[in-house]
Image (tube, rainbow, N blue to C red; front, side, top):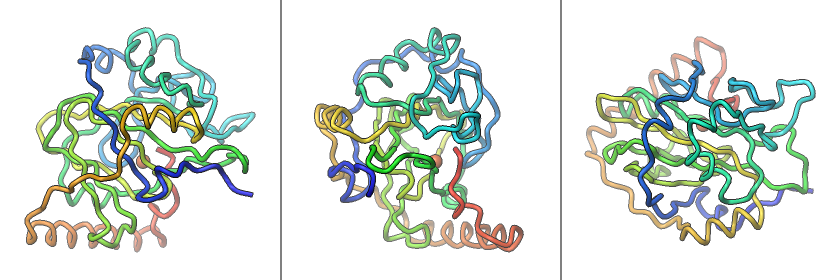
Length: 254
Ligand SMILES: [Fe+2]
């Protein structure tokens, strides 16, 4: 008994897709309604699909009846403001769970390492159905910002950094890979995050978008990397001491 997982994601836990080619009017992410929702860093979220169609971001298992992160209910008042994003989220024709826009304020590399976490994508997801993964589609043009992925949160050598120009698209098994975003700049970064069920439909869409795990990670200055690693580790250790456990080992709801 196990979930269906896509072979293309098994090697590294992520794939990078072709860039989304068409410009999207920024009103689609500026005019939707946001809720404060603590994720990795200083964030707000605008849901396009939620558990039962309300503008909120709770995990689907919190509701009555609880459900897996699938069969998200589209929120008309949001999708009518963001029609292109909604159309894009529906394009793979795979089952969609949570679908929301994240707003992230600028941070440092150390902040990103401190905030790195695993997602809780498959709670209540029945065996023999598809493993839930996430697609990240960058909205604002932030070529100097990076998605930071690690197989082991404590091992810098397991890190891949993926640049985030507008249209960058990455599909991540975010319950397997530690992840966060290092956002450089002076304005918030926006990104569409969609939970999808693994399966033939999603595999077909990944292939059509030339999904690949071969990406070159841009180099970091060695002393800069060591300094940020050390700072993040100290902060993570202090947080673990405060709580009596590492809260990022308890999978994030975000
Ligand atoms: Fe996450």
